[in-house]
Length: 202
Image 1 (tube, helix red, strand yellow):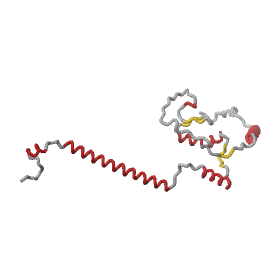
Image 2 (tube, helix red, strand yellow):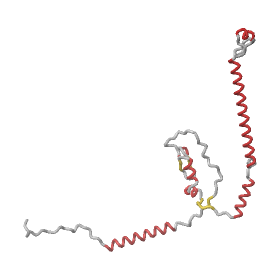
Image 3 (cartoon, helix red, strand yellow):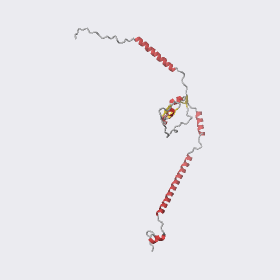
Image 4 (cartoon, helix red, strand yellow):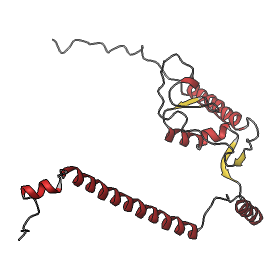
């Protein structure tokens, strides 16, 4: 190759020329749209006022399906699938522990229209609640004295059972001993010399 050859440069005209002003304008428009979108989402409406959390007024049924078998098919509706079905959230939870977590959880409580905040009780409400609980005390409840009496009674019954068991054992032993001894006429026994061990008649 000769050094005096005039080599032409590479044609770079295919490269895109960037117009900075155009792209700055596009960026400003995009930022405006994003800001409007944020403002719209914030101004959807007034915040939802939820009721404070309150205790359940129904019994949670966890034991009705205990020990039962169930045929599970993939085409069955959610309420008939294996596990615990929540009709409020329309979901199936696989075991009782997770079901309890679910019904006490935030998603379920929000679906019921409650927040996770508990209403602050006043002194008067607490006193009224104590009075209600005192009145509701079941008649079958017992005190420490009742408990002591029950323990003593149980101990006496246990001792009586043990005594009866010992008596039955003694009776069985006597019956066994009577069955093993052959019945021999005393005259025949005397003739044969079965008068007794170590005793001699003189």
